[in-house]
Structure formats: C-alpha cells, structure tokens
Length: 460
Image (cartoon, rainbow, N blue to C red; front, top):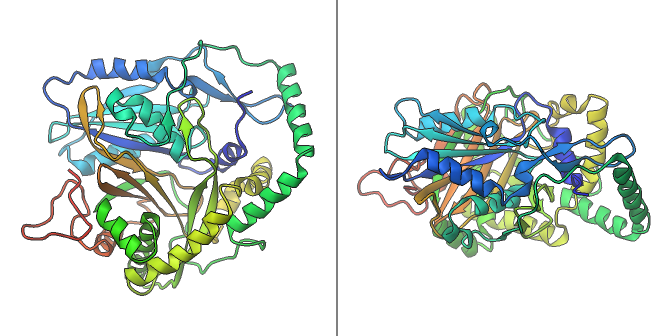
C-alpha cells in the first residue's frame, strides 16, 4: 500500500487557508527559433510517465482502514494539467513572477493528480517560462528535485543530486479494495505496538528538533503574524553561491546559516520601517528525514525545526551564533517532529479548529527552506534552462516566507508574501540585497556599471 506518510497527513491537515498549500518552481527557458511549444508539451507528457505519482490521486481510506493512500487515476488526461498562458506586457521578470503567483494560487482539484505545468509565452527577451506547481502533499523539496530530474533532458538528470529513475510500471493499477486496506492498516498497527522502544526514540528526537519538551513559546506580536488572504506576490533576489559558501565557512557556518542570517537582518529592516522592533526572529526550517528520492517515491518525509535567530549586529556576527544552534539540532534529529505534530494537527482539523489555530499562532514568524540544486546548466526540449526560481508555500498567519535554491553557481532567494499584508515588499527585497552586499535584487537587472558586488549578482 502506498500510504500517505505522517508528514503527508500533516500537510493535508494544514491545507485549510484561503491560499492553497502549493509549492513549485519557475523554469526560465532560453528558447530560440527552433523551439516548438507543441513538441515541448508532448515531450513533457511523455516524461510524466516516469513519475508514477504524477498520474495518481490521493484517496481517503474507509473508516478503520488507515491513512489515505495513493492510487492510479484511470481517467488521467494530460490536458487537465498542462496549459499555456501569455505573459502580459511588458513581458519582463516582474510580469512572469506575477503569472507564476497567480498559477500557484489556483486550486488543484482533488479528483485529479495534484499538479499543473503552465508554459508562459511572450517573454520580452524571447524566452519561455515553465511554471510547475504541486500540492505540498505530493512532494517535499527533495521530492520536487526528483520530479525535476525526470522532466529535464537526459544530459541534465545526472546533474541533480539525490534523484534516480524508477522503473516504469503498468498503468493504471487498480486501487486496493477495502479488505486489503483494512488488513494493511491493522498489520501496521501491530508493527507499531512491537516498536514502542523505537517510538520513544522518535519522540525524543522530535522534541529535540522542535527545540525542547515544553509547549511552543509565544513570541512578541509583530506585523509578521497576521491572517493572510488568498493572493500572493513573488520577488526574487540573486546571489553568488561561491561567495555565500565562503562567507559561511569563514564563520563556522554553512550556506543555510548565511541564508537564515540574511533573512533575520532583512526582517529587522522591514520591521524598523514599520516602527517595530524584534530582537529574535523565529524561523521554521524544514529538516528532511531522507537524503534521496526517486520519481516514484515522493510525498513528505520532513519535520520542522524552529530556530530563533538574532536580528541585531552584523551579518558576520549572526552567522556563527546561528550555526551553533542549527549544528546541534540537526545532529540530534532528522525530520522526526512530524510524528509529534501530525496527531494534534489532525485532531484540530477534524473538529474544524485548525484554521482558527493557524490564524492565531505566534510561535513562528516565518518559514525558510533551502535546497541544493544542480551545479550544471540544464536543458528542456533542447532549450537551456536559464534560471530555476523556487516557489515556496505558506500557511496560517505568516505573511512572508522564503525559499532558496542553488543552480549553476547562483543562489536564488524567493520571497513569497501576501500583498495585502506586505505592501512594502520592496523594502524587504532591498534589505535582502543590502545584506548580501550588492545592488542586484532582480536577476533580470544587472549591477550598475563599475559595481562588482561581493555576493549579489545578475542571474542571467
């Protein structure tokens, strides 16, 4: 039985807000005169077959038959998932990001596989955008990279770490019957009864990952925590990956530690512009329980690690303080917190209180995820993939979320915000740019003549 994992079920329970829990990426293709959109759509359809989950629906099991399960959709039709959309004038990156935000905000019917792919035509530079969106229950970050590995041209698949090709299976495989689901569920319960020692170990790991045994602490109220609406805005900041890595190593940290330190400094500037002050910002960071994923083994195997990050001081002073915390917590736990958070979230969802809780929590100020992508340039349908822009998700009363993805020597940081709650997103992106030491917040805009920033760069 291909059951939804505890982390999958937690994601299901959290998908209660006005904006769907979608994640994805924007591939900016450097298409030339020989690129044919219809041929690219056919190629995409053929490669979908290498990812069984993209032709499956998540179905709820009958009462007493265990967690939801994945089953092939016998009525799968590629036309329901692959679309075209023109980029509105002026066809620049701002317009492309607005299209991507709109696509990511469109609900995906649960009666079909939970993904979409939209080709965005008419970019001003002659390129084409490919916006890939998935419901978060379908894949976590590493799983998303596995999907990307199956969709790009063969020469680029080996460039994406932790992704392997599954053996194509017959389609469609009939869904399991209720009796088989019940037998599988009771067998699983029996195994869990014999693994109580392991469950205790998982409990300890999950508590360490969450930062202790006590209940989540309520943080000072700021404008970062407000109930959000259905609309989202995407902004992108580009940085030189090698410079960030060197900065992290120089201060006993990693790229992720620099990423968190940059976020903390930028949020300090944003709040100061609003007349607010926050000494510690609590960032929820995903922690994966696995190091690889195949296209046929997706879902979520991830926990959460809340990290309280100092906002004051210089970037160089924040990095080692953050590194000390993340190093200790990551060494002790690997995605175990989902087993702790899942049951109470499901209970709140069942009684209709999860959205109420999510809109009032003040334990976390923001979410931040960082993925290591391919080091070499990819191609799709023969067209070079110029940029890969991550699309993060968010939930509850968190008004701004961050995602970073490294690709071909560049780290792209995406800021996802609710425009009704963050009308000053430009202040935040400018602060990120300043933290990174250079003027180029927009990958489509080069630095002014004569300026060679240490980390900010032109992602073209």
